[in-house]
Image 1 (cartoon, rainbow, N blue to C red):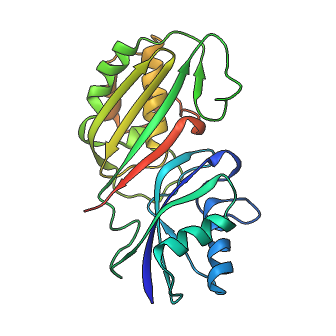
Image 2: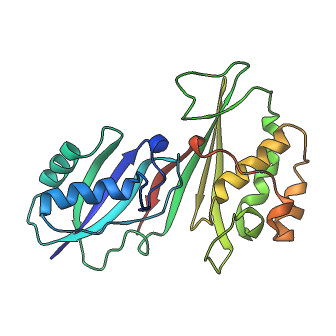
Length: 245
């Protein structure tokens, strides 16, 4: 029995997220179907994180075990030949049996993309959050500084959840603002349920003048989801990378 690590990308538009759900299309379902076709046996797949419906990934990581002896190139070629066009394996490697896609992860990097434009985009409608109004990006950056560090992020965790520890360490929050495209990248050791989207929704309210940057400190200290802003839509969110030792 060998353990394999997969790095994959996907367009989450037409899926109900990563995790298997009865009678719903999911990323996990498609990968396990492809593995079953290759191995002729049920092969469970574990992901580094369960992305929500509509969320995309450039660097999701999954692991599985199999008695099928194939080279990593054969796994990539075989899986990509069976998977839908909106899911693709980018890398495969054989790893020690102690590797676990979720529990071995040291952190993740997400990026959220906002389209600032007077008119909506036909091509980017499922890939960015369109905001027609002008955002005060400077105010948003000032507000974002309060996120960096170790904090209780209960105010940015959506329910229901079985997470008992709301404390996360955000290592960095970086910005890229190019014409109409605003990208906000967040690196942390762990993330709560829909945490990034809740953070972005609150920052956008700052950018629209509905909140002040200094409000973020009080929101964090409140540890109460009702004090923060709305949850940003899923289609602007991308899992860029999972960090391992």
